[in-house]
Length: 393
Image (cartoon, one colour):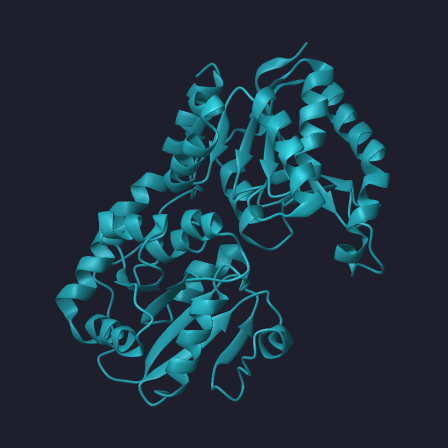
């Protein structure tokens, strides 16, 4: 007999995997009681079946063929050889845990299909959660397959949750046949850090600036411009970068030699430690590509995961992003970051100067950022989610 108040989350990206999607899943899971939730996701290890992170139990599926833990991206076509075993793993979890609902998470269509097939086999309620777009960044046969999977999941889902209002606006316009299914489920945080406002601020240069997160086609165009500009003003601005993106990737893929540019590369920082790290800085830098290898709609709808810890940090944010994207509209609405939508280097420097020199502007940004976080407060977000999923509250 299934429990009307138990949810199975099927998501490729779960801890200890780094990256935004893993963080989103983990923060969402924190809002549920242990007996309300079961989570299963991807692993590169055949032998890893279960682990506990931050008090949350995670179940694992060996779905990433690799060589000694590396190179799994080269074996992606072979992953589907493991699909029957992965499906059995999900079936066994359902028989044991008896959930009534499944939440299928994208950014991996493999796990969307696992969840969809399992929901159908056990007659469970299916919901889906898209952290970003599926078909819009694909081409050729990959796009064809993506369209088939997306259509199948949209049809089977009672509701389709999306990361932002920007995504919902786009999806409602592009897929009107499912318009009534689209709902916004923003990423969440568990509790407010203890803060003393206003935080003391460094009154004299050099000012300490920080970039944090994963750097790829979604943000590297703007990031490159900022890094190269700040290297020319190293007497005023000191830049540190925390990321799981390896230093050679910056040099050989993005043509950014961080050492020569005077950037202090700090490597990956655990998500639970991000807030403590940010307290050492004067300004948080948020970048969003003006263009790049992704589709236009991807740039228009991206809402970076690192935005939330920045808003919570009590540190002013400078956002260098295009003028016509959802993230820019969000920042304008709440005035929660110093918004620089021009590629002009002087405009960027002027924005930094306003944050570092104008105490009133700095405090306005910090105050507004703090107010904005109410939109992401985990308890309220998940209570709304439970209502939409018809949990018995």
